[in-house]
Image (cartoon, rainbow, N blue to C red; front, side):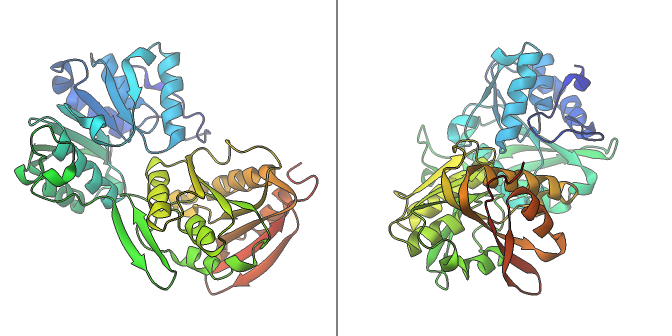
Length: 389
C-alpha cells in the first residue's frame, strides 16, 4: 500500500504531520499472517489515527473491516482516504461497544497514551470477541511504558513483545482470561465472573454532582483544577441566558453543573471524542438533567447555527498536543465567535502561561479578566459585530 496517498484532512495538516508512521507499518507487518487467515468480518481496528491500519489491512486481503476511532476527525479522515483509494465498501465505522468486537478474531490497535483507555479496550475485547482473539497493538517507543503490558495482562493471559523497529514496538495479547468472558449469548457485561470496570463514576459533594467517565476522557471521573476554577464563577456568566453551550465538554461537568444551577436553562454539550460525548451523556443522566443537556459528538460547533447562542463555556484542551495547542484553541475560539449572537459571551478558563487573551480579543471580541490564580485565568469575551473578520 502507498501510505503517502493518505491524508489527515479534516484534521490539522502541515509540514511534518503525516497520516501514517513507522508504528502503523510495524503493526501491519507483525499481523500480516493473521490478517491473511481471516474470514470477512473477523478483523476489528481500534484507534487507527487516519486509516492507515484499516486500509493497510484491506490491501493485505482483509474484508468487511469494523473500525472505531475516538475523534470524529479521524473517522472522517478514514472515510475520505477509503473513498480516494476505492476501498470504502470494505471498511465500516461503528460505535465503541460489544457489537464492535463480537466475533472478532484479530484486533489491530494503536496504543493509546491513556492507560485507562487501554484498559477499557482490553476489557471490551476480552469480554466479547472470539475465544481465540488476539490483539496486535503498537506505538512509538516514546509513548509506551511497561505499564501497558500490565494493563493488557489483566484481561489476557499471554503478552508477547516484538523487537523494536524505527523507534516503534508491538505488543501482542492473546488468551482472554476466563473471568473476563461474558456467559453464553448474553451481551450484559455483568454476566461475566469479573464485573465490568468501565464506565466509572465518582460523587463530588463539593460540587453537588456525580461524574461518569469512560477510559481516556480527560481527568476521568475527577473535576480537573481548571474546570473547578471556572465552576466557582459560573453564576456570573450571562445569568439570563435561556440556553448555553459547553464546547469541548469532556465528561460533561460544566454542562451538568450549569443545568443543575439553572433549572430553566437548556445546554448543548459537544466534543469530537466519542468517549467524551458518551461520558457527558452519562454524567447528565446520573444527575437528573439528561432532559435539558443535549450531547453531540462533533468537530467544534458544526451542528449549531451562526449567531444562535448567548453563552459558550470552554476549557480548551491544550493538553492533547502541546505543539498544536494554539491551533486547537484558535479553532475553538472561532467556533464560539461564529455561534455567539452579537453581545453574547465566551467564558473560558485557560492555563495562564498560554496567554490566550490577545487571541481571544482578535477572534471573539473585547475580553475582560474575571479571575486569576497561580495557574489559571478565567476570561469573558464579548462577541463583537465583526469578530473574527
